[in-house]
Amino acid sequence: MLSLHGKIVAITGASGGIGEATARLLAQRGAAVVLAARRGERVNAIAQDIREAGGRAAACVVDVTKPEDLQRLVSSTIDQFGRIDVLVNNAGIAPISPLAALDTEGWSAMIDVNLRGMLNGVAAALPVFRAQGSGHLVSIVSVAGLSVSPSMAVYAATKNAVRTVHEGLRTESTDGVVRTTAISPGYVRTDLAGSMADPHIREQTRKNMEAMGIPPSAVARAVAFAIEQPDDVEIGEINVRPTVQA
Ligand SMILES: NC(=O)c1ccc[n+]([C@@H]2O[C@H](COP(=O)([O-])OP(=O)(O)OC[C@H]3O[C@@H](n4cnc5c(N)ncnc54)[C@H](OP(=O)(O)O)[C@@H]3O)[C@@H](O)[C@H]2O)c1
Image (cartoon, rainbow, N blue to C red; front, side):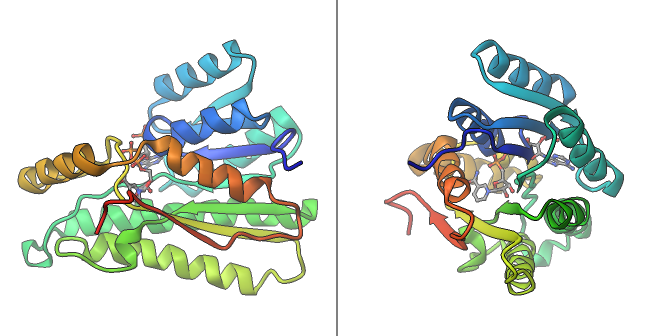
């Protein structure tokens, strides 16, 4: 019987959406979870809720663009639960716009959060995984990187860069110590559109999410599936999209 019981999992971007749903599901299934995000009051309240329901959970205020915050997330996870089995790199933003809009600030922000944030997690977790003799990096990527729609170029580029780092880490980890999983959602009903500065794109994205988006729990189940596999089984990539999404 596959099980998450006893797994120690740190999750970035856990103050809402896919990260929150993942923390709640993994805790229900027996993992200890550390919820990380910038909004401390949110992650603290969700962790408290999980504990009141009988789960094991802690919270950590983290800005993934700061390498020292990821180091602190990994060390506080070990301090509280003894080790870190999985880092779920989920924090992400999507201030998307056509390239012609030249939103260079939005481009930089996506590179900083979506790509550099992931690399900051790798830098913090990889030495610990190797010292422990095991570890699992799970990233929430996007189907937006698989076929690139208008306004999505830079967002898709950051997500594809993350996918590439995963493949690189996989090929460098064939000694069996580190597993990697990249999970690509389609439309999921979350607050992600809130990070979109362009009002027209924001409203259109919200409409698409309302019309066809799947719940964040659908992605959480994919994370659980990847994590619960035995140590010699690596789930490399999963796409989870609404059945009706083109
Ligand atoms: N929703 C979709 O349709 C969809 C589709 C494909 C991929 N994704 C990906 O799924 C992931 C989760 O997004 P979501 O849809 O659940 O959106 P969301 O509800 O907006 O959640 C995003 C999370 O990222 C956190 N975050 C943003 N910047 C951060 C930073 N600098 N440091 C730490 N945490 C940060 C936010 O927390 P704070 O604001 O509290 O820091 C929040 O918890 C993202 O990587 C997104 O690109 C989403």
